[in-house]
Image 1 (spheres, rainbow over the protein chains, first blue to last red):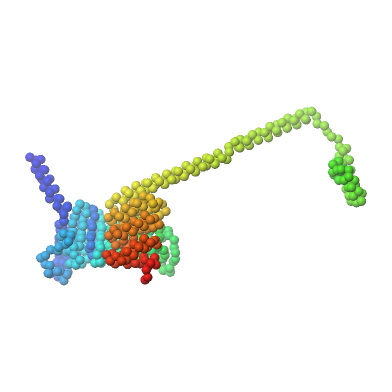
Image 2: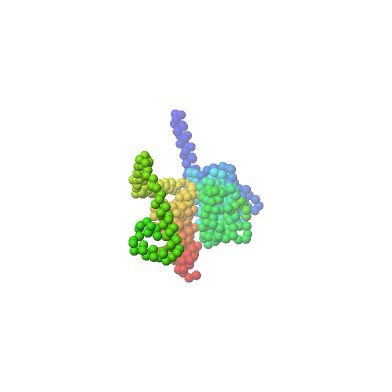
Amino acid sequence: MNTLIKFFTVALVFGMAYPISAQNLNGNINNVTSSNGSLKEYKLPMTSGTLNIVDIDDIKIEGYSGSEVVFSTMVENNEKNERAAGLKLVNSLGLEDNTGFGISVSKEGNTATARQLSDNCSCNEIAIKVPKGVNISISHRTHDAENIFIQNVSSEVEISTNHHNIKLEDVTGPMAIKTVHGSIDARFSTLSQKGSVSLYSAYDFVDVTIPSNAKMNVSIEAPYGDVYSNADINITKKSTPSNSSTCYSGSSISGTLNGGGVEFSIKSAHDDVYLRQGGKK
Amino acid sequence: MIAALEGDMGQTQKEQMMIQIENDEHLTEIWENYNKLYSHIELVAIDVPSLSVKHNFSKWLAEEAGSIENQTKRAKVVKLFPWRKWAGIAAVFVCVLGFWQVYNKNQQMGSSLANLELMMQVQSPTERIKAIRVNYKHEQIDVDGQMIEVLVNVLFTDKSSNVRLAAVETLSNYMDSPKVRTALIKAIATEKDGGVKLAIIDSLGKKQNKEIISTLENIVNDDSQEKYVIDGAHMQLIRLDKVDI
């Protein structure tokens, strides 16, 4: 009899757990209302795996030592669509706005996905606090892109976007960043020797600041631009301008820094590349 | 004069010489001096060696002859080891070294290939990019080999656009290979990511080729492409001097 009870108990627990892991996950929703609008917040328990962020126009990500992914945004009163009051946002993918600010968050296995449902998202910048052990993958295809700002993140970051300007601060790598029309401005606090680092912009500049002790095998390309650096890389110098930085002309430069280390690739296909060593800017 | 005194001169020549000597005081004086010298030499008694001296000399001569013979034999020992033998050994050594290098290179290539295929299965995109960057050093790759096949496969199948971009950038180092050019041209049609497509177009612009120009012209005339992709193709055609600005 006891065995039977145990069996049904286990079955009940699994039966309840399955829909949570396989379908949209309802996190905690908080609303703090002020005279100008309301701060909306959505929390998703997560300490490892990958957070996919899809088609969100304006993002600020901050790494922290918590155990939840926290999405938040300020929805101003004049941005609320009063006509839609009482109605649900309908999406062609069948996704639900479970955050209350136009973002659908779901989790399957070790991967969570946050997706913007509307082009006219009733929100400003989406701030996302991400636990240290969670990798971040951002993809965006539309023209409605503003900025991606990532701060204090030491897990793996992958970004593929067409129009975002990307700013990274106090990051360590590994990372793979690609934007077509946007710029990349990256400041590394330390340089991880895991994986690789690649920073690519097709039409805008790439500006990278690394610590003075960063060990790397560096490859820099600016086929239709110039490369400026004060880093002591073992490469061929083509010319030296009068200012403090050194101008390396040429489409392809490779060498080692501090004896070599992680594979570090920087490319601007049609603009300039700046590599600053030791936090000088 | 000396020949005449030694008796090595003919009578006629000697007579002619004597006429010249008689007519020249200086020559007469020299002739008389030579005559006196030869007269004194003839007066010197010749010592006949004793039997013991002869015996010792013969013995010494025999020893010297033996020594020379031994030296000759030693020289023959050197000749017995011919240069052809050394050349043969050297040739074998060179062949073994060559085979070892080829074997070693194949082992390394096989090892790199196995490593690369393994690395391309890992979840992390930055690890996959690292695998591409580390394994594809320009001078090491046989462009018709399996390493290129792996890279082409990455171009068509990897789920990360950043990894596909790394594949395109690496493949662009081998634009002389028809296999690479064909793969990149095919990828234009299947690639969904605009950034990767643009990188492919930039790579194609590195090589002036009839098929590439035709592909770029098709992109320029294809309204379904993103505007910046069309612009990119147009820019490459300008660089290849195939359209007017």
